[in-house]
Length: 398
Image (cartoon, rainbow, N blue to C red; front, top):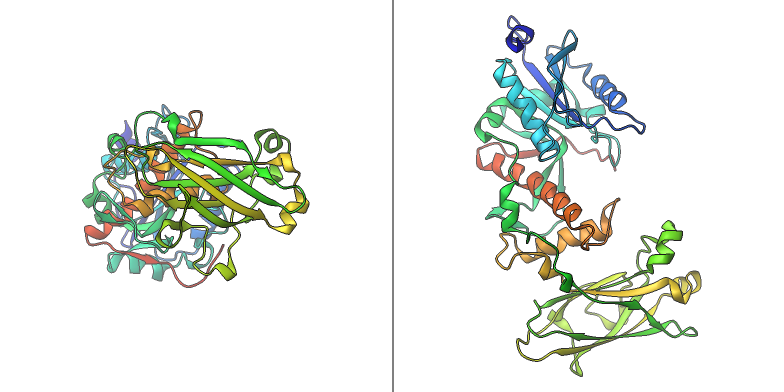
């Protein structure tokens, strides 16, 4: 039945053939998946000489049978087990099962316009597609945090943003499966949240007149070296005033001591400067502490709020949380420490839908991290197979 519906799409076409695998989740809010799909069609409308087949994969409705909604548009139920990655693989499997004769694929989803406009509006040209095909390139927007990241032995410092990219069919065939993070997520994260991750959570001890504060904390023996200190709105204020969710830089740390000995230099990882005359203001600070397997350590921190923050916020609005982030990972997790740090920093502070990591958000954290890992590994795997990533061009969109 399926073969009669979609057998050798455009079998007599002499021109190159693009298959668009569009994964959607039928979001109710605007813009809807239908509206976003229509925008993608508009961007691809000027590809002269290219045959285009669209396959919409509905990850919300996995049982939907394959149907034809227009001459070159097909719709099928998806696979949301690994979110968009399993949805894309479902679409690729359908096209292969039905012997669709395409040369190049556009892998795309209904989030391709977030957080800003897509490169497709200016760069969806026959020349770009031909370059991807003839030069064996994965073409899209390249992201990087400008640090050296490794995962499962691969360099994942630069990656193609997977919500929209062009890839030759031969690369997809060689890859075999776009789902690269599944059961192996257990090698990275424990199965459950470790409650010892949160070491301290209390109101900030603040001098109302000067904005100076002090933080004291007992660090248990056998801690995993790194301690993250975050100043944040108290929970009650956060619930009543979402505008304070991301305060940005709010404080300066002036002095840190461990067991009455000052910490400086190599122990100050993030949120500090080496030059004490030009101290940086931040919201979170990361320390690497000397590890003691036997005795607890006493941490003492002195700092001050920025004047504008001091004026803006009430005393009760700021609390301090101290985390032992290494407890979020397996002891021999297959990613380097700077990548571990960045994943936490991105999801808790930088991402538009940031959240605190806790028992309640553990599944959300591991799911979002798995998607980041899968995206990064795709680029590394394609490169290993002889299909390096390349940027669409020089114009920036956000």
